[in-house]
Structure formats: C-alpha cells, structure tokens
Length: 267
Length: 325
Image (cartoon, rainbow over all chains, first blue to last red; front, side, top):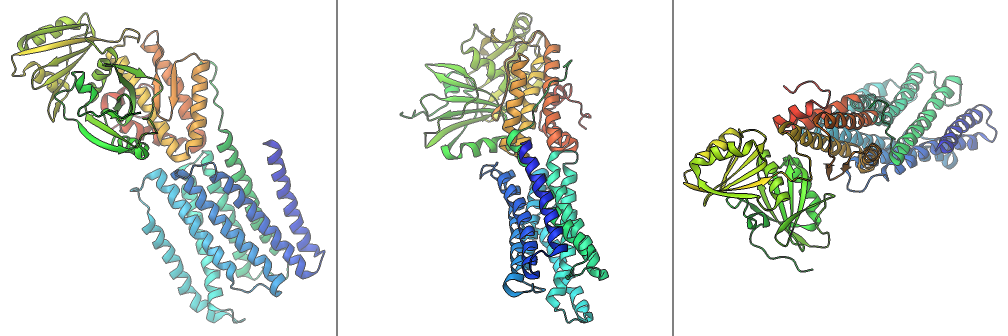
C-alpha cells in the first residue's frame, strides 16, 4: 500500500513538472506540445476516474451506497472524455473552438456529480428528508436560466464576436462550480471529521482552480498563448485531478482493508 | 426435500399462542432478504415462523432485530446458532407472523428454550393471583396461563409480577392492563404451566435482562445503519474487528450482519455493563473515524429512538448520549 501510494504521489509530481516543462519550454512543435499538455490532463482525469471505478467495484450491484460512487465515477469519466476531446483539437484542427463537443462532456459531468451528491444526501437523511430530485432540478434550471439571461447582454458586449453559446458556457461553468461547491461542502459537513468526507472535500479543489481561472479570464490575465498566471491556473486544475486521485486512492484502501480496532489499556 | 404441508404454525401446535391471530404469507425465496428488511423497517416485534423446509424455523424479533432462531424437530424446539436464513434452494416459504409486545417475545423465548413445563396447575382463575405471588419468590421464568378462548403470559423475575400479556384472538393486552385481564378473565378454570428460565443460561434480573437486550438491539441497529451508509464491505470489516476483539477478550459475544448475539455468562450485571460499554465505545469510535462524530451520534440517536422506552433507558446506561426527550 505504501509503495503504491508513493508511486501515485511520484506520478503526480512527475505529471505536474512535465506539464510545467512542456508549457514553458515547448520541447517539440507548438501543436504537439499542446497535444502533450492535453494528454497530461487526460491522464490525470482518467487516473481519478479509474481509481473511482475501483472504489465502486468494492460495492455489490444492489448496494445503494455503491450507487453514490458509481455516479461520482461517471462524472469523472465525463470530465476525462472532455479533457481527451479538448486535447485532440490542436492535433486534429490546429485549434480548439470556443464551443465544442468537449463542453457536452463537461456539462454531463456536472449532472453525474449532482446525482452522486443527491444520492449521498438521501442515504443520510432518508428519501423524505429535505432535498430531492425536484429541488436539484430547480437549481439546475435556475443556473441554466441565469446563465442564459446574463449571456445575452454579455455577448453583445464582446468585441471579438464571441458567440452567445460560448458566453453562456463561460457564465454557466462558474455557476455550476458554485453549485457543486455548495453541494460538496454540505455533504462533507455531514461527515465532518470522518474519512467519508474526504472525496467530497477533494472536489472543492476544482472549484478553487475554476475560480482562479475565471478570475484570470475576467481580468484579461489569462493568455492562451501562455504566461505565468495562466500556467498557474492550468497547474491548479491539473493538480485538482491529481489531488482527487490521491484522496480516492486513500478511500479505496480504507474500503479494501478496513480500519483496525484497538482496545485501550484499562478497558 | 419435500416441503411440509401445514395448516397452522408449529408454535400453535405446541400449545402456545393458540388464541393469537397469526398472519399467513407466502414469501418467494428470492425475496427473503427484502422481506427481512421490510420487517426491520417496520420494527416488527413478534414471531415469524418459516415453513417450507424440512423443519419449521421460528424467529423471534424485537423491533425488527432477530433475537433468536429455533428449529422445530420431533415435537421440540432447538435453538439455532448462528442466526440462519431459510434454505436458499426452496422456491417459496410459508410464513406465519404474529405481532406481540416485547414481554410476549421475552416470554416466548423461555417457552421455546424450555419446551415442556416443569409443573402444571389446574385451578380456579380467582386463585391465579395468589399462585403467581407464591411462585414469584421461588421461580424465575414464565407462566403460561391457558383457557379455552384466551391465554396469558406472565414473566416471573424474582418478585411478584406487575405485568403480563393477555391474548385473545386479535386482542393482545400488555403491561399492567394485561396482567389485570389475566387475573380477571371470565372463564372460571384455567391451566397454568410453569416454565423456569433455562438453567444453562445465566439467571438475570429483570433489569440485567433488559440491559442485555438493549445492548444487542442497539448495537445491531447502529451496525445496520452504518452498513447502509458505507456498504457491506466496510460493515464486514467492522464486524470482523469487533468479533476479533470479543474473542481476544474472551467474551462470547458475536456480531454479524444478521444481529448481535450475547451468550456470555457474566459474573454479575455490572460486569456485563462494563463489557457492553467497552464494545459500544469501540463500535461507535470506529464509526466516528469513518463518518464523523456528528453522524455517529445521529446513528446512535436513530437506534435509540426506535426502541421501546424501557430498552431506551437501559441502553442509555451504556452509551453517553443526552436523554431522549
């Protein structure tokens, strides 16, 4: 177990350094360097998804508790697919469009994470306790409506002619992240102090990464051509995947090995 | 293996609960686990007799938790350990269900384990009270009082009884009212069968018996909810650890997904309480590591809320929770 954990930490470090190196140095052509960066992202996302698949395999098919982690896993696979698609664009067409198939997978990921959060909530509070599918659907509809509402005026202000859909997504993603953050934080609070909270807390790393990226976008500091703040934003996102992968690995080991009990002396 | 064709339960054939209303159900074998969960969710207290295999099996349940299982063979009941599930090779079971109050289940436990009475008295119903008071000082066990159209169960625990279970058709009256109805029943003559507590188990006071019952029910309820939240694998690891600790400490207490069984012969009630507290501290401590203190406390609260008030009070002597409102 320690060896595997060490190797995972090492892999995370290597991937982070590799990303920074390729980003800064472009050791091969710009096109292939960009493809390499996309590949690193995909690898990190797939690692998290694969580890979550191992977690969900610790549950029998009829176990309600297993459903939570299966939904979580599908969310991660959705994002891994999005990373893969996004990473292929430079190779296939030279440049990633503002709106693409990858966005379908990004948005799909949110749906699966929402399902995981709702299911976890209902496992704790019961099917009748507070939040249900209807409430989640209302929140989702609210986010979509607000994004659409804001996209119209914002799109008209775009000097570079960025389409409405692209602006809509740029508004939607931070709102979706905020909703995800609130959900993950709420679930983590249910298990506060317990190891079961950790995968939910680890999801917040994406929120931090997305928040920083959005800040850079809004302030114009983010450059697709590359600069230090942009590199930091990218690394934050990459390390969010890697951090989540490590947390999921710990969760997996807890499921596999359990936790030994010790009788205190004097008991 | 041919299934038994029966039109009544083995418990009734043994002469007990002849006046009680049993509900008969046909349960497909594939739905047995689902049926058990349904009884747990309903917090069923009573007996469930399963027919369809070679021998009927009687389960005693208290608030959905199986407290004991007994196989009926050659006219006698034999306690089965560990707590089994009916034969998986059968297509369906005939299930007889009788809902009883807590004292009814406790009394039935003694009847099933004793099988035959040590003595039988035929006397006027009017003399029943003095008989009970006379026996109370010398017998720990159960009195089964039988009339043509009704019956009663009285638990003797070293002092004159204050409660009883009166059964007549659909009507089951418990507590002081139950005892009053037993003493005042209209039929002039009754037969009283005396079933002493089974001697190879420790003779417990009423209070200690309640604490033991509260411990097994509480631990099982908390474990059940933990397994629901975290899955069978985590539950199994915890069960293995609890059984390891109990074994290392020399306690005959066994945890399983089907329930908690305590067959340890404690020197006295205080020793039992110490052991129960230790085990519950370990159980809840482990659960806290996984789901956090707040949720662990909530699981304990949920387990307590489902229990009979007397069992709640007994359980609260074992776990450090604020009193139930």
